[in-house]
Amino acid sequence: MDRFKEINLAQLRTFCECVRHGSYAAAARAVHLSQPAVWQQVHALERLAGVPLLQRHGRILRLTDDGRILWEQAHTVLGNVDSLWAAFHERRLALPRTLTLIATPALLSEELAQPIVEFHQAHPDVNLQLQSQHGLPVLDCLTRGDADLAIVPADVLLIADPAQFLCEQLGQRVATLIVKRTHRLARRSRLSLEELIREPMILPLEDNHWFVQVKESLRSRNLADRLRSRLRVGHILTAQILVSKGIAPALMPMPVNAQPPAGLRYLRLAHLLPDLPLYLLVRRGVPLRPAAEAFLACVRAAFQMAKV
Picture 1 (cartoon, rainbow, N blue to C red):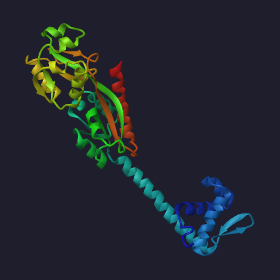
Picture 2: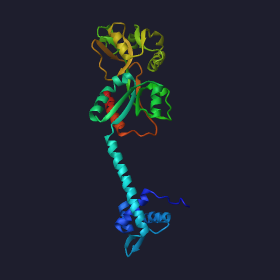
Picture 3: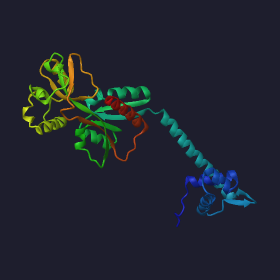
Picture 4: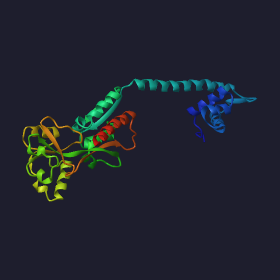
């Protein structure tokens, strides 16, 4: 029973408002409580103090001698609390804002490049930290709270715990054949599967998540064994350089609105092969900070524009 009512800031504020206004009713209006609730808070303080703190003189509440001692101390406590919050907000506004994003190197240099520029221009006070990771390190960074959000291809979801992370599909990369402009296929506007598998190509690594889906799609049409590899690479930039050198065309998942480098052409194959979905990952139960929400607005707008 000794802990029935422990002293708290709300009780002290209510008590001081009763002294300032001279009545329970006026104090109740000031602190947005009912009059009985105000009386109960003051009465709780009196029980803790063991002495009356306020007395009625007609319709006016006045401090007792003991009440004056508490009132003076309460003002000091409340003033210190108000100063604490003022100092907190002042220092908080002076601190640089930091937003940490994890994504693959390809996403950072392609789909996310323009949203990053737009966000930086709109929020120059935010220190945007970009981390390049893939696979399990992405999830570890999010779990530890070292990053605010991650934007990753679909293969990361295979190892993500659905109970720990929230995911949202932002967009996708499209199956694309990269060819030199002088290649015979460059003049084609819509390829068929027969044309696609007619010659060896530069392909992703054998265990690449997207390429596994491509092989499954071809296997369902009894064509998987006819897809021939000239060589395999793990990065789109490498594939494009090799195509420009005349090694072979390359089959890669490419950004929807990407423009080919000089001398190359992108032949879209969405009508033939699966896309590579791209996802946002955040920790479940951790609300995004305003800076992260603002950045995601730029990202979502960019992906929406890519669909138009």
